[in-house]
Structures are given as structure tokens and as C-alpha cells.
Image (cartoon, rainbow, N blue to C red):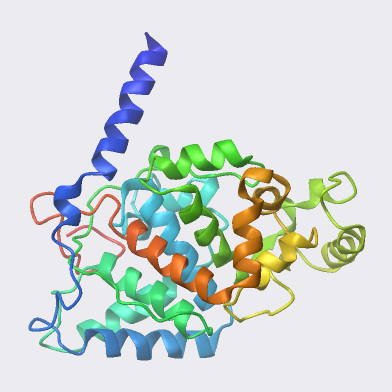
Length: 314
């Protein structure tokens, strides 16, 4: 019976996240008459944050995924509860960097500084726009962002279920299919690891033990982790959004096990090779996957709100 209850709860969450009714309210230009300068305001704010810290862009992009993949794209990852029971304090979210949160808070403050826009734009939409800016301002594709999300009111540690760095292809596909995403979507989104870094604790167990890791790369990582606590996910083009992540996988230089498995598993290797040889195809599929991810678990006025402070429900 316990297994049945857990399965029923899982199905209920999946149904909630995949509901097409809320996603139907999303559209580009949603704020055209409400806050016509919204995208320019967010673009300028994110540019400033990225100039202040090289971590800001990758951290904001990662924050978007961690938000959408849990309770849907409702900025619940931003909530700070007084009882410490919130998403960002779950162990799976503890690696999220402060610079990501600060980037969103700065953009929210910039938007609310305009009287016409004040308290009329959701934190969830600002997060979606900031993720786009993190990509495009790093040399990646610029794409239209569907808007019209409301902010969620709930954030709990127990709601956080995310992919782990040791997931195999079947586990990755199971997780992403629960979000309504295909294997192709998942591989394209994984290409977001062309930006950012990972703590050594997430991959150290692979060094010298995982035959899929290039031996020279393993030696390099061993040296890196001896002097610092992290390594770049894509050291080939640090700070640049491109398809070098997939070229790294071809050479056994994927940092995380869940990255490298995309090449070692024959069922996904063809897509990796395709993206490695065709950056335009990767960019196109990445933007499509980001749009689909942005439709997950969208809240409406009936079950959401426009938060005045992204950290606290109204």
C-alpha cells in the first residue's frame, strides 16, 4: 500500500506539472501594455550582474532548471521560509550559487523601480528572462520567451527531486519524461553545461576509476581538485555558450557521469555527435527545449500571485 500511495503522489505531481491549461496562458509580448520595457530592463540588469561576476550567468541558468523541475516554473526556488523548510535548503539545491539568486533579485528590483511595472511582473517570468539573457549574453542563441507565469506560494525541502550526477540514460529519460520532455530535449538542455562549474565532490569518485574518462583529463582534474574545490564544466571555452560540451563528451572529457553517459550509451551517442558537428542544430533544439521547460507547472491567478519580494509569498 505504501508503494501505491507513493506512486499515486508521483502521478499527481506529474499531472500538475504537465497541465496544459495554465501553459496556454503563456505568450510572447504578455507585458507589452503592462511593462513595455520589461525585457530591456532585465537584459540590462543581467548584463550588469554578469559583469560583476562570471558566476552570475551560469548560476541564473541553473536556477531556472532547478525551479521548473520541482514545482514547475513558479519561482518557488527563490522562497526563504522562516522555518528553514524550503527548496533551496534541500541538499540537492545546496550547490546553487548565491550569484544566481542575487541576479534575479537585482533584476526584480530594476523592474520594480519603474512605476508602471512595479509589482506587476512575476518573479517566475523574471527568472525565465534572466535565463535567456545568461545564454544569449554568453554567445548562445537569443530566443523569444513566453511570459504570463504567476508565482507559487509553496516551497518545501521534501518537494525537491532532481537528477543525480550518477544517473544513467534510463534514469535521465524517466526524470525528463515526467516533465514532458524527450530524450532529444534532455540532451539539448544538458548542453547548458557548456557554462559553469561543478564542485569536486560531484565527480571525484570518477577520477581513476571510470574507464569512460580520458586519462589525461583525469590527471588534470586530480591536479585541479588538489588546489581548489571546483572545476569548469567546459574548460575548452569557459564563459562561452557553444557546442564544445558535446565535443568534450566525444573525447571522454565530460565532467559529470550523467554528462559522459550521453556519449557512452549508444542510444544517445548519435545526438551528441550531431550537436558536436552542428552548433546551429544544438542552438535550435536548445531553445525549443527551454521553451517546453518553461511551460512546466505554470501557475495562474487562481493558484499563484505576483510576489512583491521574490523571497517571500505576499
